[in-house]
Image (cartoon, rainbow, N blue to C red; front, side, top):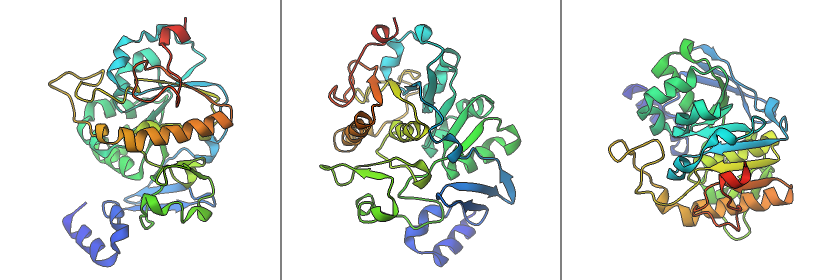
Length: 301
């Protein structure tokens, strides 16, 4: 957006609305009674969206999420049954010929800015539903033009930074829980929560995998496999990188205090609702008490 529009926005809106400054005034939205964004226009052009409500509890089988840890290199996905639906995050798209992704998650705006070729391949794929934010949609339209976006698009929002609503701090979520009934909170970590209804927003926990877990829960899957969830060795390249192309990671400072407590909360919910989760990264930093760790070849012999 132009500097002038940003200045106007900042003078006319409170600081807790600052996260919207790159959307205003060209993005317009409408929400339904569930709070999900059902209508989105960019510069007066209507953007077709997948209704989140249409996805609620529509699945009941198995799904594999591919993250991007170095351990992916050790997996031969050829034995994965065709009945297992696949989802990917960020650079996992490099596995698309092997996994034939059906769902995809990108909520890091820096990733969209820097991985232009990869994102072009994603948006040109008609067979996937891409979950991203409103800002993500705007960036993709500006990069590739709306005519070249062939994938289906579903909007997900950080519950603390909803579009055209005041931002809230993560520690304020519990205080406002009466208005966010689908939220559950950790009994030991007050800043850790999980959203059971993504139409009300998604809780961030430092990794897009946590966003994906909330979406997958909402869609109704009963068994979840996660590949590449190493959460360690951050000085090593992701499975699709080398030392020269490696992008920085900031997860090392978040694993113990943010990521693991969030995954533990998800594990408690999934266990109560008889949803099985298997971590296919046998050396993962996520404790086996959270998600049991198993070797891919042992699971899919």
